Length: 365
Image (cartoon, rainbow, N blue to C red; front, top):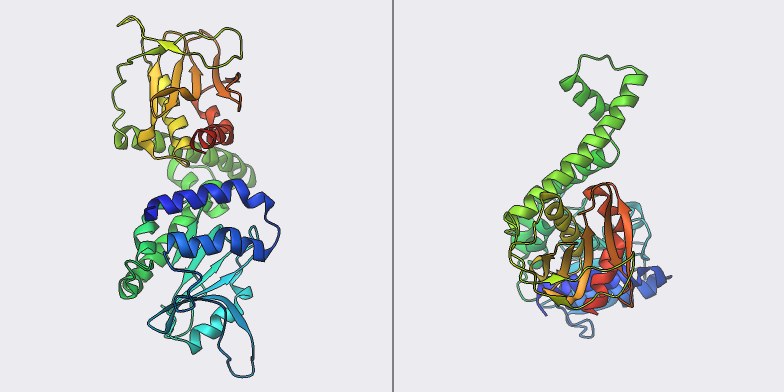
């Protein structure tokens, strides 16, 4: 299994199993040890590579332990402190990491709850662990730009010097990205005032700030979705409608098992821009579970199908967009029974994201 496949596999496991994990020890066994072994590539059962409950007495603090130490040539390289899945990663609760960082040769400290992994080094003061991480990996919202740096910490390609040399840029670029993301999710008054001043002459009154906060939230949501759809069209090569090689027969009513399909008469199917936009949204959601090239499309006179592996028996969703006044998205349960959900526009598909992901997970289980 490749590095990328191991990341995707563990992310899927966290998504489906995290709700059943109740303790820190269970978090270690279910998520953190697999991360060390399958993602980073270290043998968790070899004490020359991974030492659990690592102890290095420091001053008056005797017998304190850090959860894991990753070793190389007899020297500590990475220290890992663990919390329970769902627990906040507060650096104030990582006192062992701070102490052990100063009394070992470790240059990398990791604070994790099994889902989020915060990576620290000593950029601000030599041999003293920084309070801010230089790299943050959220297994359920993976930032692809961080993976090349994470790969440098794997057993196969361990390159600490390269990680440290790029850590400062990673730290501040990552922090800025998270700050921008926070402004998009919950615009601060300062952000709203700045944007309002750019587009209007209104004064910063309470009422104006309230109104422009709502407008800013709406504008940023629309901007992000437009950017995602535009990037997907370009990156995935779907700038032109695919010529369908088959069409699924029309389902009657609002539910029913996905039927076998017959080839349509050439030229009797018209793929609209709205169907393609809907396809891009479904594809973007499904890509959290599978590689993008596995999600394909096939249009028919009645509906637009989104398939896994171009297989009619693996229908992820159907877009019923041909009605004059109403639109629906058809989603399937474990028995392949379709239920249509009315939507006002393409953006409403996001409300069914988890159902789409669950369908893909069933097909790939």
